[in-house]
Image (cartoon, rainbow, N blue to C red; front, side, top):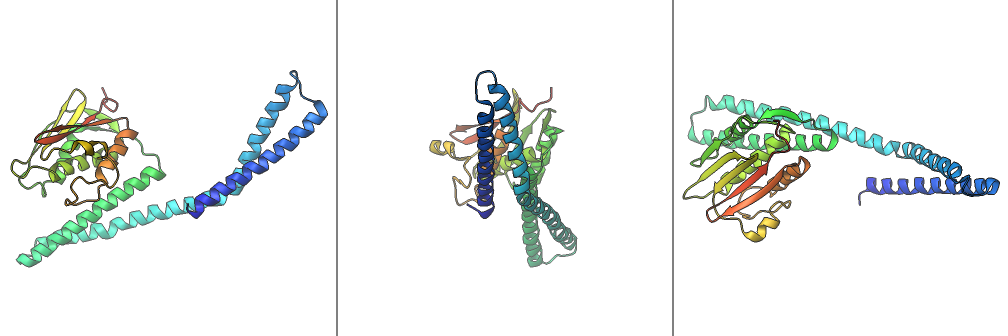
Length: 284
């Protein structure tokens, strides 16, 4: 248990104890003066409850105010730091793109590519961190957007790494209302996994929409049945030889649960299909 949580629990316990002692004393005085019967029960108990609540809130505000102020300062500091991180990462990416236009030496081109890939990974980590912190600190407003635009945008991100994998997308112009950034990251994770765990002999990804369900299918090794129960667990990776930390699908499940999107997995002998039921976020 960290110190802040311990201080919070101790403070709440002290407040509760002090409030209880005061209420019991006031109750004792009132009972001594008026007694307790059916006629005066409501007139004695209700004021005691109101007094207890008022005392509890007053003590809580006074004693816990320093803890809340500390959290506010931490949130402000984190937001500012996250914002500042974007500047050097964007600078590295921009200058790498400028150098690529003038460098022809094969070794230098490879080095620039590694720098570019690393900066893209840093930028992705920055975006994930910014979204996760904002999700915890602030309320994220739902936004309207079109599913086909979002799918096409997500596919474009993987243009450089999909290699020979064919991605077929048949998505109608459906309008959705939900957390746009969260939905975007959900799609990115599912498409990334579909590419990562694809078949080497017949690589293929199919994305389609039917009966309010968005499905992402990929050719590849069938997910082991026993792993279907734990595949959304944090840090789980069915194939540990693949890149990543096993966080993608846990983030997908967390987003879907929070936004009332049912997610199911169909397995086939030659592939797997993730199905997202979007009926609760579709604008008709």
